[in-house]
Picture (cartoon, rainbow, N blue to C red):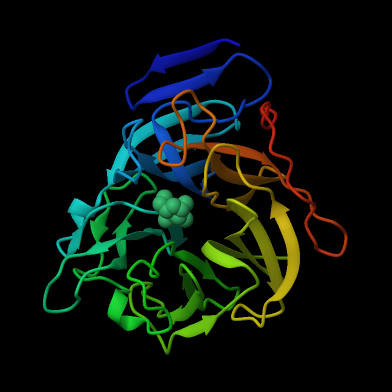
Length: 319
Ligand code: FUB
């Protein structure tokens, strides 16, 4: 397999010498928590960035990265575009994030940690940055956290407010979903940076973290990292409403090789459905040195989803 690294004015293009994308699609650096969007025919992939040493037994995640492609084979690395240091109230690691476009602006929802200050005693928190382009520059849109630990009351642990997923329904109403240990849901105002109502708490079967919510052909999908036998896997539920109740549908993907976590990012692009996730298969990889991969997703006639096959060859290049 021939891997070329071509230096361009913007960053590296990772080109792989076959008709397939070859998993993991990002070979360097270590990446996790993929979150794809499509804008102007280009797929932008936002990821976390694992920088822990081989011996490390915990995350070290300093910033969020952006990659892009137009053919699902050649990926341009645009480098770090946001870090907890860009939020004056934040400290610590850069956990999972997701970007949502609305009215020409790009809202970058991140999970990180709150400084101990007059507002919060610390713990995981969600912030939002905004830019006029999918590549930034992104700036803190609020000057304070959108969600912090003391705002949610159902779980005592300090890291339950992670993994934001934002969905805007056809009527323009935006929703924020997040959580570790339970699913939290709240409406967002049209400005995308303020809550618009109370927080709802749900406990989808086996839910751990990493919700990804979207709508397809009138069905709302909640896909999430769940309690597998030894490691996380992916399960999903559906509803006829963006706030549930969520009807459990089953396992969507088995645990990822050599990684305790797995994290879903789902998108339709140029007529095909893609399931992004991470695994720990690269040399020296593991639970804290993960890599983003992609495989096809297939829907049945009734809207249920076939179990995703995690492959080495990945997906075919789009001609
Ligand atoms: O990457 C750090 C955390 O691991 C994410 O926030 C979770 O979803 C899990 O992937």
